[in-house]
Amino acid sequence: MIANSMIDSQNAESLDADANIFSEQPRGDARTNNDPRQKQPRRDKRDVHGWVVLDKPIGMTSTHAVAILKRLFQARRAGHAGTLDPLASGALPIALGEATKTVPFVMDGRKRYRFTVCWGEERDTDDTEGRVTRTSDLRPSADSIRNLLPRFTGLIEQVPPQYSAIKVQGERAYDLARDGETVDLKPRPVEIHELTLVEHTDSGQSVLEAECGKGTYVRALARDIGRILGCFGHICALRRTLVGPFGESDMILLEQLEALCNRAASGEGSLADALLPVETALDDIPALAVTRADAARLHRGQAVLLRGRDAPNSSGTVYVTVAGRLLALAEIGNGELIPKRVFNLTGLTASSARKNESV
Picture 1 (cartoon, rainbow, N blue to C red):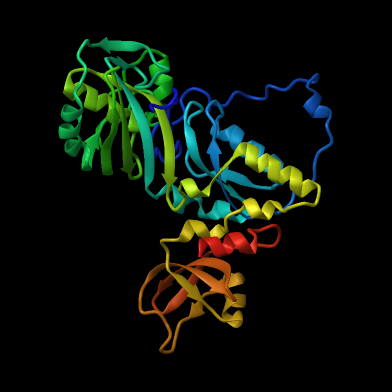
Picture 2: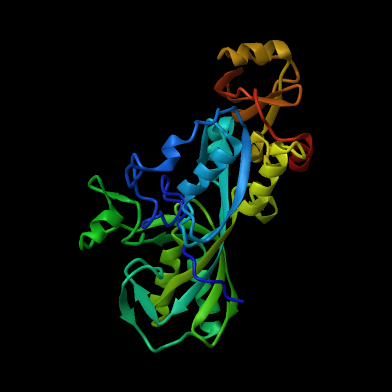
């Protein structure tokens, strides 16, 4: 079945797709002196370290989702690895505590989307939220769509949507578009690893799946395919199913997370069961085990000389472990191991069961 209406926005900071242009903008402090939340006692924060891959529901902003998880875990620090628009659902990886140091590795990974294109209308936002700018009575056949998809696979040039988070002379493109300005956005190279037609109906909608790299705008795919087919189109539904190392099997519904929190509060479980280890984000990076003596030097920010037959002969980034525990991100170069980010995992971390799952 074709999904209910939902729109995507990937990574606002690195433009890993459609930045949240409607509901993620700062709104200031909406609370007043009459707000009962201001009178509630402040809960003590604690150190929590790990990843939670929320199956974000439609209607929730990514910022709100982070705030909810931060409250549920009473965590000191939290952030997400790629914005997902309120009208989209699916994988929203949320980093807690020391996991925030690994966010860039997730944001640079591949993303997979399942999205629905409504044919016959092009809109200024390239999704259902926008104003209709072009219409057509033509409707594409399944074969015409399939035959076109190879042109959008591989390394391609893509013009970002007018409503995007790209900065133009210090202004966000979506702010300029809201003011009625037409911005001349230059094509950018993006990589589409896979693009397939999943379902096609006679009602004027098609479901596609795309696996893409950093910087890809899914909305622009629907727009450009519709233009070439001559029928125009915009995204009317989207679900994210993969972000870097995190897939559908890692997702947890908000209702399940809240139920786990309630059980943990009554002593029947632990929130650690909802956490994935910090190092899950580092799956594509080689691991290097060190002795406790070398670990002590790295923890102090000091380089370690690599010598002996067991010394790696490669260079680049590694994640360092001691006694099976994550210690640091480091660079190997000139025979030395140089720490770049040191982790302090004191506090609540993933349960041993979740750690075994990630091995």
